[in-house]
Image (cartoon, rainbow, N blue to C red; front, side):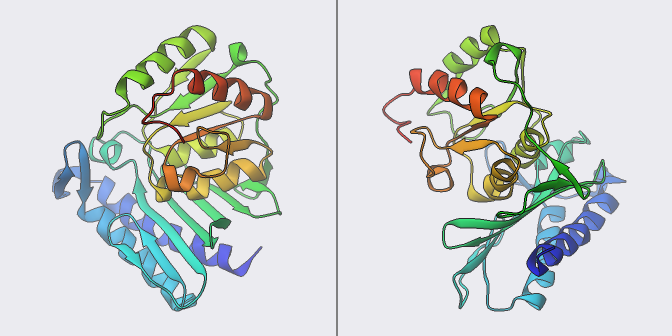
Length: 266
């Protein structure tokens, strides 16, 4: 296992201890609103601080892009991309679908990935070129090839509604064309589930790099495909993402592209 991946796992487990302790009495957790329907808790901040402490101790010169504390420049071309608690709204409500997501990128290429689900003690990991794993067992995307047989994940618009009409049109079509749609509420876990074959595809608009950096490497290392809305690799920049098994991916991308508006060009 790559040394940086080991450190990321250590950091994720450290954060999960803070999250698990807080989950025992959610009534004590202080919640603030960053903007409408976008929440942050003291748990997010404490978990992020714990992650950064572990990562900085091991790699003091690496940059950091983290959801709550923003961007910290490093002296090298490496950058950690961190979501300390993906699925904060779920966490606040005691809905057990949230995760810690940590990725390491060199330039624009993600090389290491960890998504850790503290509720199920499921650790998803990947190193570029070395495959994807769930609790040290190799995982692959599902073998499904037809959209009609597929279970597809997504994320509803909840913060910015500029693309709501396009989204609803895609949702309507896919409801009729697939086995089902799911919106669990934590994109990093949704992407990990595609890698593990639990979902056959996923699409969402307006994601942040920390929502998807780790999950997208998991999918590509598990044999799946990931792109922006143009079928290119610019999803970390645009925030618009389509992913899936190779054949489901192409059918899903075609459906999404058919309803694309001028504001959704990538």
